[in-house]
Each structure stands twice: as structure tokens, then as C-alpha cells.
Image (cartoon, rainbow, N blue to C red; front, side, top):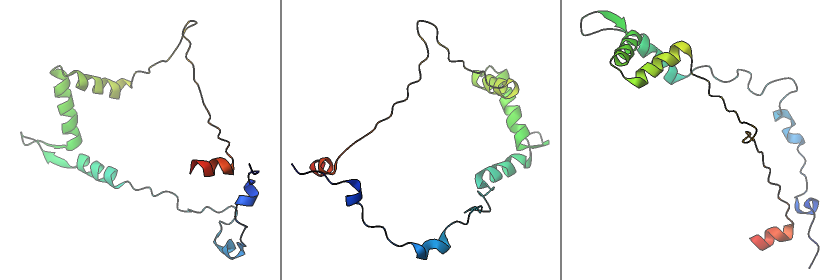
Amino acid sequence: MQPTASVQEVLPPKKDATHLAKHRFKPGRSGNPSGRPKSKPFKEELAKAIAKATKNSRGKTSTNLAQIADSLVREAKSGDVQAIKEIADRLDGKVVQVVEGDVDNPVVTEVRYLVVHATLEDMNDAA
């Protein structure tokens, strides 16, 4: 069996990168100075549609949001549990679910790392 090659022998020789210097980020300057775009097209269109004023079946003008809220209240009043839960969550906030253990059954968080050591010969054999 021959000795395996070291990592340095396997990597290609480094190329001169001086020609790329003008394209590098300047120290203290962002590569994206404007930042992430603030617009969210779907959210903006949805906000327009909800704010839009329409006439209901009785000829009364109200926003779509008011009509949606009225519909949710009607559903809750008729006994729809999901509508009741939605209203409660919106008014009181969602109930926090506590995860707790006890002496006999403690809550355990386990983090596993996989470390792989392979030689060049091992990788050639696998191919």
C-alpha cells in the first residue's frame, strides 16, 4: 500500500489574483448599500384590496377588512370553534406552550456532529 497524498499535494497551485483586486469589497463598505428591497408586492396588493371600500348587501359602504372582521364575528357567534380561537388569539395573544420535564423525565436537547476523516485512497476506492 502506498502512502496517501496530503491535502496540499492534491490542491492545484494558487493563481495570481491581483487582476481581481478592483472587484473586491472595499473595507467598511457594504456590497449591497441599498440593502434588501423593502417592497413586498403581494403584501402591498393585499393591503390595497383589504383597504378598498365596497358596498355590502344592504348598500352600506365599508372596507373589506371590516367585512372580513364582521364575517369572523358572525362565524364565532354561530359556534365555529376555529373562529372563536382566531378571535381569542388576536385579542389575547396565542397561549404559550411550556415544554418542561421532571426529575424522572427531563427535557434533553441533543446536538450531534458528524466528523468525517477520509484519505485520498479511501475516496478513490469509493468512486
